Amino acid sequence: DTGVSQDPRHKITKRGQNVTFRCDPISEHNRLYWYRQTLGQGPEFLTYFQNEAQLEKSRLLSDRFSAERPKGSFSTLEIQRTEQGDSAMYLCASSDPDRVAEAFFGQGTRLTVV
Amino acid sequence: AQSVTQLDSQVPVFEEAPVELRCNYSSSVSVYLFWYVQYPNQGLQLLLKYLSGSTLVESINGFEAEFNKSQTSFHLRKPSVHISDTAEYFCALTPNTGTASKLTFGTGTRLQVTL
Image 1 (cartoon, rainbow over the protein chains, first blue to last red):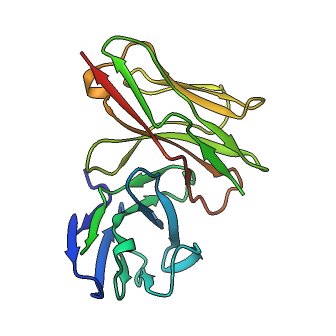
Image 2: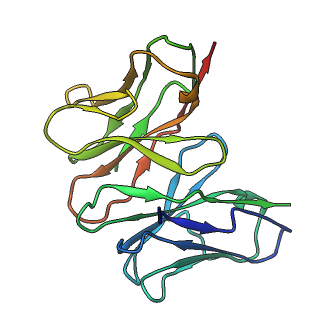
Image 3: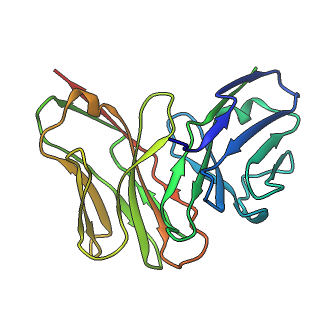
């Protein structure tokens, strides 16, 4: 089963440090999404790629956040100068272009900023 | 803009009892509707989806949901729950526009099944 893979699963960092997360989508999926989920809430959309092009960014994605998908395969999400409010689960999902509406999620990266 | 409302944050139920998790949505365009399940410290798993056709959709583990356009609802039901159904359930939608398919989620309902 080669589902969506995220690394690391857990990250604890000190406030002000930079962190980077990686997502490997299902290989034939050209669409990749990042979501953020805080405690007691549903996931909130952050950004979306089709191949290497970043097509949409939420207003939740402040200037400290940057996402890339340089070769249209894996993606990285970087948070600079982390703040305690960045503590959350960061979820990655991918979808097949022929099955637009069905997204498959990874297990997430749980970030704790202390 | 679209939104999803899950009014029940927690639903306690005894094993083998029926359950209904409520979901209402708001959208100015046609939508696809989904239910996802999340077990502790896990990602989201698709439980079932409504894209078109029959308004009643079923999952492989006994859940079903009915799309009701007039009431803008997509409630999730199961006639007899099991301990293993204990999890967080999220209702979600995406516009039926054939382009970008980001999901808008509700705040979730925690289903707690006890003996």
